[in-house]
Image 1 (cartoon, rainbow, N blue to C red):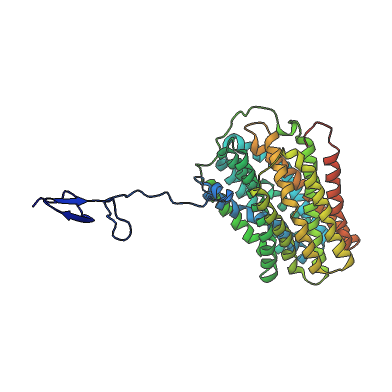
Image 2: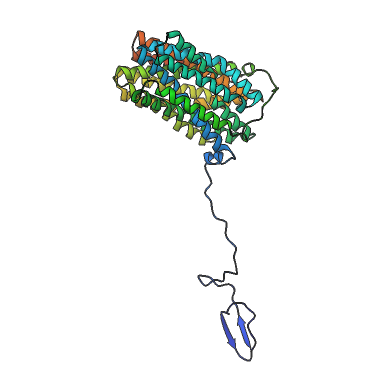
Length: 440
């Protein structure tokens, strides 16, 4: 009898004079032949979000982790210095003046440090600059600890001016990795701003906790350790580092069209930050809750952090310069809420809630600012251009800290909230007063 030619049993047979095998094709169900019809439909994968795609780039997570560790102390040092100096010397005016001096010195030194970073590379410059700044912070700690003369506090804190702009270096890496992708660069800028706010949210809390729980110098000591560790980790990621530009084309960034008025607005915005920080600490101290000041400031940063992430996930419409006046106007309007809450209720809880709302306008303003800086800065000078923006912010923080401390000392903590509101209104006027046809 002839044997069937099929390798598997036929579905059924009909017998007459010959055996006929009838095959109706591959079976379906559990009895299906594994040797047949092995094609697989492509699995449907959920599209990843913009931030997940961003961090999936080779080396992105490594340098981001190191940068976050290095950036966390940026929210710790000034609060630690204010608490440390005011707690031992009994003067918020002195504390505000010392931090203002250090920030003003940083405003002068930072652009030169950034220029060296552009010319010789991030790793070669950032590491030694960080070590010098760490020695300055340790000198301040020792001067406060051992009751050194007041002028030594100013000298020691001024030595921290060599601290590299880790946020600017991280943004420069994104710009290097995302050349030509404006949408992804917008997401990266928003992510970096959210990271800034996260560090400034956690930094004051950690500083206030350390200074209040252990000893007044604990916040500065821990900040030094984190700064050095983070910069070493960040600098070790050489694969994502932008190549140095020994002779970058174009002139100095501060001469580029549109940069000077933008720096003036950044100066006013920095004054908002500096004054709010000092006045909030003094207000909480007057209410008998000095250690809660870090939490209150953290709520403002939390609002800005969430707003930054949401803003980064949105698709930008139109040029950044068209959004800038609206962002500054929203920040000015929302900053009046803490002043009213402090003046009308005198409640620290009400102040915390209004600062949370006010912080939501901060991130869009800063993201748009940095986008404009990147657009206007000549090629090969991105670190220097962004350092100028940060320098303007630091200069404003210095002025705001000094002005806020003076008003708190000579008038009242509640009246001190008028300083950040005035600074925000000044920034709005500068934004609206730019010449027609010129970018802000």
